[in-house]
Image 1 (cartoon, rainbow, N blue to C red):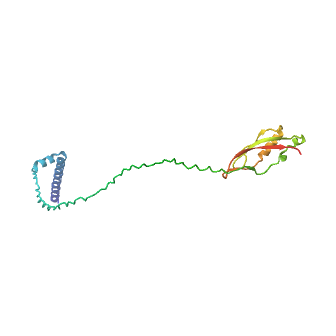
Image 2: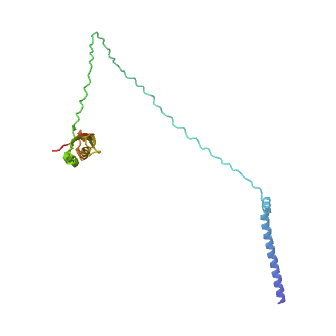
Image 3: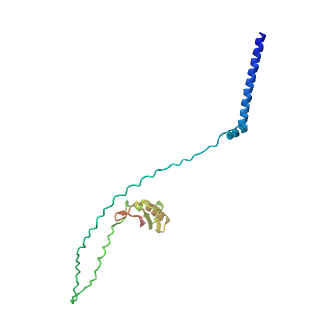
Length: 208
């Protein structure tokens, strides 16, 4: 049993030495690669490379055969045709030629077209008696007021009538303006189109 133990111990010691040697060898190889010494040893040991440049010899192609000769046809000459040009000869005459220059009158301009006009007229005739001031009736005031009023194309007044000539009574003048403000006109036309206009109206106030 003791001999077997000694033999086993020696076997393990030899194996451990062998493993340690292998580890040391690997460490040395790794160190050589890291330090670059192994690369220099490889370059020193390997033989020089010889390169041989091979030149490709190109075979020259045989030249193509010459093209066949072109057969040129000789030009055919066509004689020019005979052209005869007859030039008229002016005959001289001793006769006297009478040339009469007459003034051509331009046609008269067309007559202007007649413009068709229609006059304006009131739609409803207003009675001044309906606008007579009661105070003027009691005071027997009479008179005539001339007013002016204007209307548009629709016949409606464009503003308040104005007094052109007074009757002498402010009450009668105001009554005439009220009458003129009620006017509604049928506008006159020019070629069928209604036109705006103005007119004067004499409003007469009298007692029966």
